[in-house]
Length: 552
Image (cartoon, rainbow, N blue to C red; front, side, top):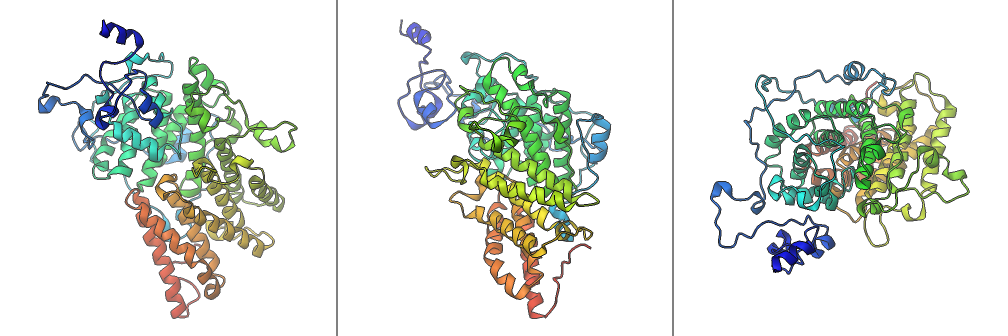
């Protein structure tokens, strides 16, 4: 009788895993118990093990935090392909939706020794016999009932929670944690999330796991979830100092996104089958693809812009709180609404994510100007006005990166990084990009603006949040900030270096704190430290230039 009552009420006869581990009372709600819902944890139920003893080889995976050792041999296949992004875009995406630029931008252009990585693909990966079983979840698969939730053994709960704690706030393209299991993500996406989280928890097995994850994602069926996995992989591989692999993942993600028509205005709504969380996640995936494209073009050596700005038709993402609350109200702003809000008589509620997109568009416009053969002074003034005006148009709740309750807004923090980056490239395009033919007026004013932007990036490290909570791209933003300050010091080393030493020292300290998470931070901190040492040594030896000279 009791069992029947429990089944009818939608309750379990045992406590959930989290309540059991904490020896707390559980209300047995199958959808999510009250404690898990309040703590934003994944609520899972498994049969009680009382009186049972599993053989070692059959013990459930949830009882241990796994090290994610690959289930296949160590010499897994990695596709040996031509990673030239120009050729990939021209051959695979012959459509006006793709724009391949003629120029390239990257932190590696600043100093010869700043080409952050030259990792080559291994030739000994086997391609003859490789088979991987993966889910074929597509975007039009029906939503699961609460009884169809995947078993706990399908993924590592602590790692998934770590993903949402460390990585998701800076790149929130996936559904909220409490909605993840209901949408039944494919196995390869869960494994990609676990691989990402491993960098924050323990990098001991990330190399082995990487050999499993990359082919698992590449061999998956075409779906929005595959685009999401490729975006995450591109960010992670970039931060692992594997730029060629990161660019390849990004190119594949863009190619697949256009194949699925994700850039179309109503794609997210039509493919979600009425599920608002899936709809918003799909929309965010497209915009995240655009943001990563621009960010890598600015910060990664040899990267180029791919996505044409004219094809950005999709609605803008909503605020994070609405997303986490499963979108009781969907906002439907477009880029035109965003651009015209200064002249609108009605109040336009702009989400933090939309501010980040606007900042990314500013950076993209600046990159387009700096690569042009001829730079029009009027275009410079227009972009300079847009950059300055961006800060003034931030709404009251978004004026600062820290809210009144002490929580950080990573979307606004990233937006500030992107706008400062745009200001640096706009103000000092010649020294930073090696283009001596660019002549702009008011050089002292531009130098001051570049210095302010570089210090602005450094000052984000002063926020009362750990550096690891920022986007993995923050390492490259810090490199850009440091190199800009060093370039400015070239004009008056004796007086200016002392002014910038505290910020340079802080940048190096933050990079060193991130080296245990992202390999790219380790090499960057060492190179910047060597450059500063050359400056000091140049003072003592009365030399006018550092050992590491700027490109001509």
